[in-house]
Length: 461
Ligand code: PNW
Image (cartoon, rainbow, N blue to C red; front, side, top):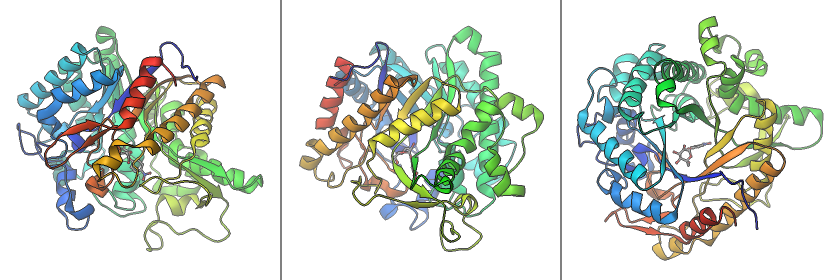
């Protein structure tokens, strides 16, 4: 039996655009994901979040399912364009009313809301009129929107996450173009990242100055990072793996903990890496009350034998991949998920220990971990998801080991509470503890939901 610390927090997670649906209802304005999904070829078979899991109408049932599981917290995100249809100015009261009902329902069910302010669904108006994340002014728009959320929800919401995985918005959104807004460039990812970091800092500054004292909550940022295992003990390979982690996680966590980007990035990205003003650096340093981590997989890293070219075949447009010069490979014996991501539980322990060491033993929450497994379009296969149970066991065992080794891991939120819109892959990948029939909206607990519930209730397995 692996027992977790007494106050360990167990939860599940979702994101607004992936589950809510009702994209054109209740006064919601469009986001960049609505527009991106309309471009032919950008998402699997043109899928979009227009209907998704219809959580906007089925939220009561979803709370009941979570209550049944016995989870202590639920991490969800607020759709900015449901709160502010244009991303600035006027507030949409219908949107506020929806989140009020959801938050009240959770509190009533004894489930602590963990709210992400931004999970990639930028209001389309800000993209079209102001160039979205490329415009430094975005930080002020973010802070204004966040203030509305603190004012309206902060009496009941005590756990805030400013941004989800800015790496994805920056690199996938502006580097290789796999995600909205679909841009491909080798300098824009660094600009988008820079403005996202500044936005995070402005939001936190507003919370701390205007709300935190009275509301008594905590606020932080969630970053994603895979583990990079050195291919050998050769110092070059060890350095390459470390550099890969600096370009992945250090890019976003170093400014938050130290006030600047890693030196390896300064050296290699040069002029294309923006500089923080003294004021921005001051606001950034120490701007997270906890370390939010989303972790899914591991790759092997080595010093490349010949120059690495980046995403796509366009030389000079590899962005991060080309700048970092790390060769990535994998162990052919590793099993893979339906995302083609390697299943390597010990990589989870190693990334937790790397964070613990580099950032001075911060309190860490895993705000996402989970898997999509093949064959789950078939309901029977999905309901008997023993492979997901094995995955969760492996990763939770790694978490347990990290705690025994001294890491201050305080909670684990499983991605995801239910099958949903998996971004560019549409509904073709299912991460849920609950199976969703996307035609009828019906939900049903998978075996993993039952296993997770038993684990939560026993505080271990
Ligand atoms: C995360 N990558 O996305 C997101 O936070 C979720 O919304 C998403 O559903 C989940 O993980 C599963 O994909 C990622 O390419 C998407 O490294 C892509 C990557 C990482 C995380």
